[in-house]
Image 1 (tube, rainbow, N blue to C red):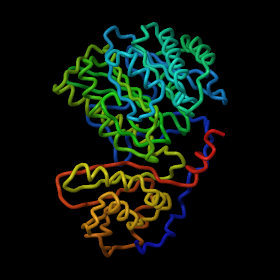
Image 2 (image 1 turned 135 degrees about the vertical axis):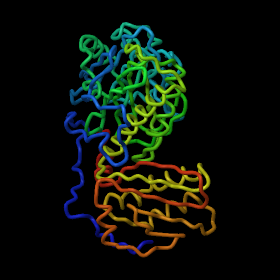
Image 3 (image 1 turned 180 degrees about the vertical axis):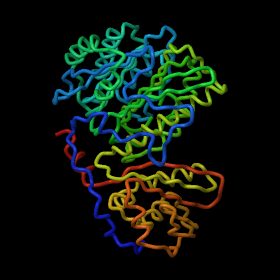
Image 4 (image 1 turned 90 degrees about the vertical axis):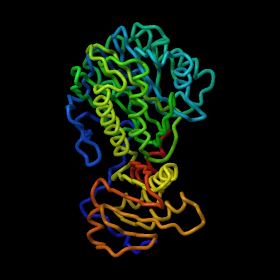
Amino acid sequence: MSDIPPDSIPPDFTPPSSRPLDSAPTAAEAPPLFEGRWCSLPECVTELEAGTLPTGFKAGGVAAGIKPSGKLDFGAIVSTGAETTSAARFTVSSAPAAPVQVCRTRVDLSAIRAVIANSGNANAATGPVGRDNAFYMQGAGAMVAGVAEKNVAVASTGVIGVQLDTRALSKGASTLARELRAEGGMDFAAAIMTTDLWPKTASLRVVLPSGAVTLSAQAKGAGMIAPLHAPAAPHATLLCFIETDAKLSAATAADLLGAAVAQSFDRVTVDGQLSTNDSVFLIAGGESGVEVESGSPDAEIFQKALDALLLGLAIAIVRDGEGAGRIGRVTVTGGDTQLCEKTARAIADSPLVKTALNGGDPNWGRIMQAAGMAMATAQPEPIDITIEGVSVAGGGIQNRFDQDALNQAVSGPEVEYEVKIPGQGASATVYFSDLGHDYVTLNAEYTT
């Protein structure tokens, strides 16, 4: 272990206070998505007012009574474009929630016209009754949006193992149908929150060679976060809804979404826990008239914008990790991609590394331990560790460095870790939150 003293918490650092399960956040409380050190907007992209929807979309959120608090808990996003296309990804959990099952079996994932979502109840581990309730919710969404049921996707988040109240769904749908509007993006973002401290949403104007388009998204997530997406499949209680007025074929939408998710939601962890409900949707209404074809200059720029949008939201989810005070980024380089990935995740999910991050303690010994555990060769391996640009270990042995300077370097809200394992040519990066008292408090009381 390192000889770094544990008492290195900066005097001006204040950990987050315990949050209620139903806070009342506003857009003004949300930290900037694209002003951090790890995510910025590419050229030809400008940020619009939060909650802005692309042309041809409307959204809304209402209080249906699913949450006992009476806060917003039921929402929808609808595309009015006649040639709307879409793509989606869902959890790889072997215990998928009822909404995920419904989306996979009863929804045309290439032509989603509407998504209806609730918070306060995950509708997971609810059996045949839960599936029937998800079918009911899909039907309610079809009524709200005025489209066929096969074009309505459903999503839920909240407590597992409790049946949805269909009376609340019916009441909420009647109200929601009257509340949908082009300015309803922020209400929808608020309606999908559970333990989130603020609504996670952003809108971008993207200038392509063929013309300008709008790209927007709303996401939720703070705990049960460690996403890994596959085609028609993620990993965390993470919901994300993406809209654009660009014209995309279903195949192009799937390609763009898959590439963006791989570099964003698949790169984050809060607690290493795979959710039953993860869902990510990309809906292209086409109302701008700007067509984006695979392999074109338009697609290249659009992909960069989508990558930045999802990465910004992914980092926001980590930053809002339940009880989080600091976030970290670990990059592992070496000769084997799979081993780099395994090692990066072992470090990011280590409770020892995460608690050290919480305390502002650059304890490199904990990083060495996690890396060695992941590699598990039973032979000494040369592992190099750098923290905030300071080389703290080389070949598995501590280097000389200025301890006071390093303590100061890790006292900020973001900490960078670099780990070198044998070989070269491969790398993996994971963004992660720290682990503090509030995480335990919140999750110990989650259902009570």
